[in-house]
Length: 335
Ligand code: SF4
Image 1 (tube, rainbow, N blue to C red):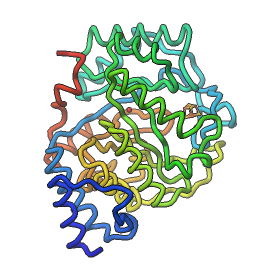
Image 2: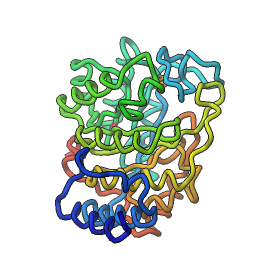
Image 3: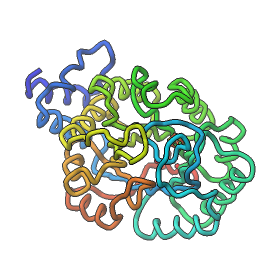
Image 4: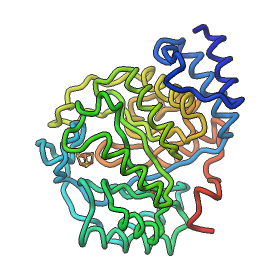
């Protein structure tokens, strides 16, 4: 496909066309990168406008996870130097939430290590969400692994409006990433969270040895799920994990992935997440290649960026940070 064809396709997407498996999508893997980025930027401007969205993730419970995700320093299967602690105190989380709100983020997400969150730890999470929703206007996002329908209902009642669950990669490649749970477990979790009235944040990780076709397949599955936000993480190889020696992914590969997600899921927030440090100025070029949101601040075990720096960069690019839709912010009026 020529550069002109790619831009023509971008215009068709703006006009309402949606790409599926039946379309020849090889241009996303081998098309000219500058044309893909320009087309994706055009789609983002037309369908999402200049609104940008920032979220902060806090690690609410760290380490000792029984699952074996091969990229993750928190898995108990691997010898890493990650800090271990139980669910954080509600007051401390609320203070952190309010601090992030004052600094200008729109969403606050608590992520916990583990297959799920139950018992006392789950009660502590509910208490924290209740306290935060009473004192902050931020959109609250939860990421606690596999929840029951009843737990989802309780989270919602406590003020959570978004649930985060990554599918990580393609269905084909998933068994190379994790064997203690399945791709279908994740799809089921996402569908149930949606059915419980939560909006969905769902993305994945690139640079784990998958092909570009796997990234395209992941985007096609995410498009089917109808998600609001798509966090794209570039693998930061963590010492001691099976993926600890993976070669770092290039900025061009990240840009191509951002652009292909914008072509395939044109109306969602395409969110830069972990690995922003691999890119010039935390990913400035990605915001001209289809991205319109980011995880900011200290990102779990992989290091992050500064909120103020992100707001300045986005303003420089002509984005307005904040101003989420009414539907997203159903609570007031989780990455
Ligand atoms: S990604 Fe989550 S489920 Fe997988 S090992 Fe890490 S903490 Fe556990």
